[in-house]
Length: 360
Image (cartoon, rainbow, N blue to C red):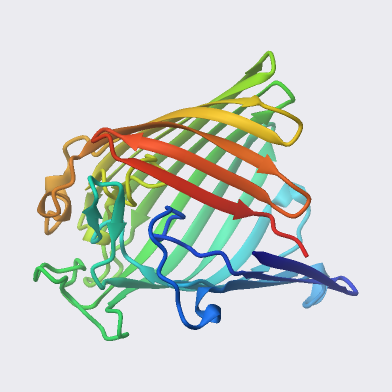
């Protein structure tokens, strides 16, 4: 159960959300419930404030605060208002804390889910985004960020090594610092019968000081969908690679509901490179229910041994895998319900459950 409320005060908008749905295995995977004596311990909530005239020249201030069962996120964004021909600029400050499961988690039950090993990731960043004027269906964004990555345990104490004694950072300290220049080019085209989306991202770690990470990171995302008859076919493809003085937390984690279904988060592999593909065929069952079948595949391209500390090999991750299954999407006036049933390459079955767009 959950609730969402929007409050308008003049030109400002305040969104408040509370969610009492049990978040299972960090990825909405159904497993035996552990009932807490305190029902509020199962609650997660969010607070979002948007004000268009908080500063001069109709500049926009966005504040987003989220508190989950095991994670938290605070985002403050200040966006300037400029003519479209000049592009847009925004200043972003963000701080988040979450369990680090994708790289340091332990795969369980034939890799169907991953459990935390007491490693939590605290991220703080401040940066400037410059959105260049759009040309036809193309858009481009250049960003400059300073990032501070800090590792702590479940008790909030700083750690520099995991439970196996391997460093969790590149520097050997409990934290890594980096100055990153990011360039992203996007192509988007959509109509009632098909869609195409391409995103190319490149990141460069700038070594202005000796203690800053130096790396090059590349990521390509492409998706295509088209309608034939009452059905709709969609496919997504992602690949990436990183070179330089990298840390384990910069590796690509493969597996999970947003990657390869049927596996836990990062349970397929954690490598210096990755390839992931997802395909879905959806078809209406009635006005409110849509059925689908899917096939997900992913691989670290045998690059796991290039990650410092070799966490993928140490935790017995296979390095490649696939998930196949089916699901339903059920729309109501109160919520959108998503249920996926997946089987991985080890014939382990997993049920994913999600609810979104809850309103009061």
